[in-house]
Length: 383
Image 1 (cartoon, rainbow, N blue to C red):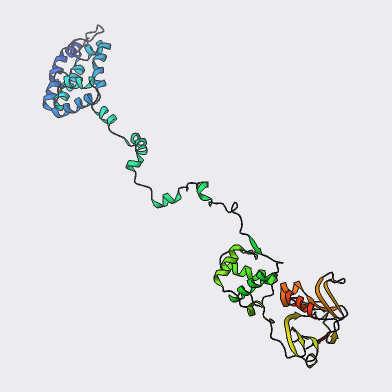
Image 2: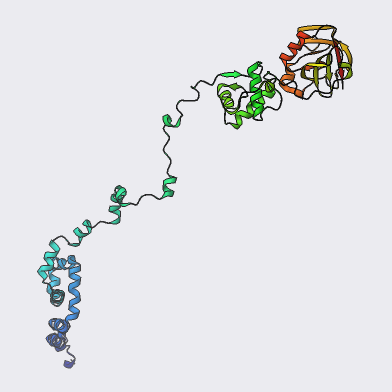
């Protein structure tokens, strides 16, 4: 039995049900117009939803252009799905209406160069203008701060301006007038002038020794002169400008120390009266002092003998055979002990001692004494 109501006619195909299903398709299109023809109604009913799609086409024009290509490449799909193609075209039209411009205007905008690109290329960017700003630093960058100026290395000085002109090495040194070992009246004047201003603490002797050299160094240092200890022309002229001409008593005082009261053994005859206490020698004739001079004596190991003696030998240019020491103007009175000139005494003063002799530091005085004293004259050494 065949069930005619089920639509199956028993021939392998669908019967009336299949026919009804096929016939019902138009009804479904009418019943559900939104899947086919109803798309324009949705566009009119909901224009706001259609407006958003044209923005996508304008923002991405390549997708809008690709639609016709897809239609040509797949015509069967276009034929098979007419509703989807109509829906896409309708959405594009709605997008154009929503943006307020024609689709042709959008296509023309795609052909023309984007207006934003030339503007961005012309506008200066930080990376492009950095080199220009660096090149234009003198006009746009403020001057460097003092700290930057000080941090910058200083230019090397010009060697021609850094060196004094004339060079000290090429300038001739001032001529030396007096130095250690000199002996003259000018040395005596030098000593007297230095004593006037407090640089020489004893009477002038006329001999340029270590004491005089130290006095000259003191003067040179105080006047910002080259400290050499020798008296050159510059030092001498500066000293002359600061002092007066020495008097005779300043140049040749009788002694550095005051004479002691003479021993009573010295009051008669021709006597060399020598006092260890005052460290002076007085040449006396019948109790009258003819000349006086400073003297020094031997050390405690080689003391000068005391007592009354007489001159037994005179030697003008004597040299000690025992100590190999010059003893000019020697007046021997006791063995190898004599009154004579001592260059060491003239140079170093009382800082040294003799080997028992009576040293005199004023060469001119002892030379004059040598000429006046005779062999056999009395010598008195006492305290």
